[in-house]
Image (cartoon, rainbow, N blue to C red; front, side):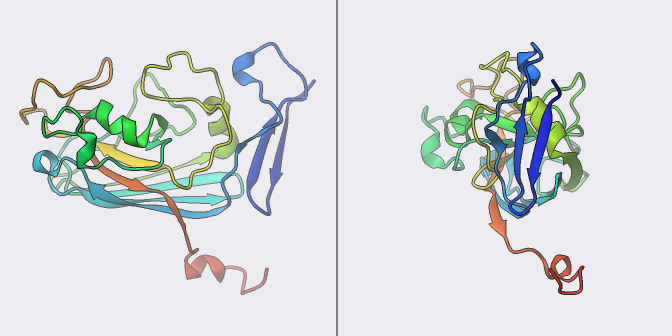
Length: 238
């Protein structure tokens, strides 16, 4: 039996389904809707975290959803210069605050931050089709600590990977288990100069350094009005 894919363009509600089990649970989809985001523009204004260590990092993330295509643009300024910065979309509904520093060491570390923004769901790297690659490449800031990132992906291709079984629930990255909507999710930027001294109490994810996983900026995705140029491309006609 062949697999089927349905796209309801009116609301950009994507339904991935299976018209017969093929024996591979990682690639079999139920009839439930997995990606329920309406087409349009979603923006996160990035505010600094751990600014006493990372500086006043700012910027924005803009996600454009049209038909079956998701385009992502991230602009960051004031980050650690000439350093690769991890950037991810997380599942929960808020950015960390000062009260997130539960061990009172003056730093919101990776594990404390995750209690607010939840597990990562979409790493914003060079291959949005998959959560993990053999060699993951995130943006590198220039001499001024600025960078610009842009990537696009087919929603169907991305969801194939996100709906697989989660082979390591403890790695800080989650798989899709229910309906998924981009709105209200958190965009988080990470990474400070490895020469910066950190307290011994700062925690990190297994296999990663404290410096590379330290959150330095966060913002919540909200739906925004489509720019005028998008509204006028068809001459004002529906």
